[in-house]
Amino acid sequence: MLQLKETTDTLQSRLENTEAKLRAVELDHSMDIDTALVKLEEVRNHPRSCVTIINDKIGKMILMVLPVC
Image (tube, rainbow, N blue to C red; front, side):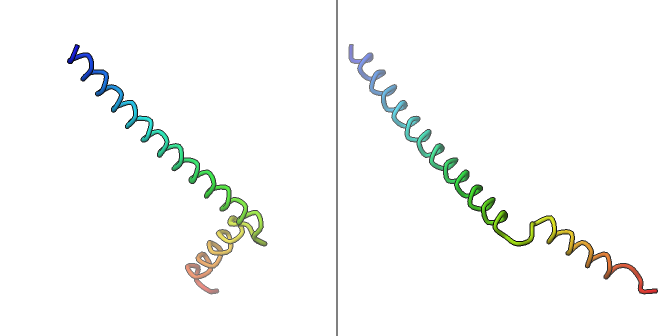
């Protein structure tokens, strides 16, 4: 009977630890989603899209590389 009690206690402890880890992971993922939504909203509210900014930078880089005729 003592061995059964020890096994039960061990399993209960492992279950509680696993549940705590799961809650931590869920909270982390929730924060990741919230962060992504905030960034998306910032991009939407920005007067110029990221693609436009990148295109402008690429255009300037090309002009710096090409020889002037």
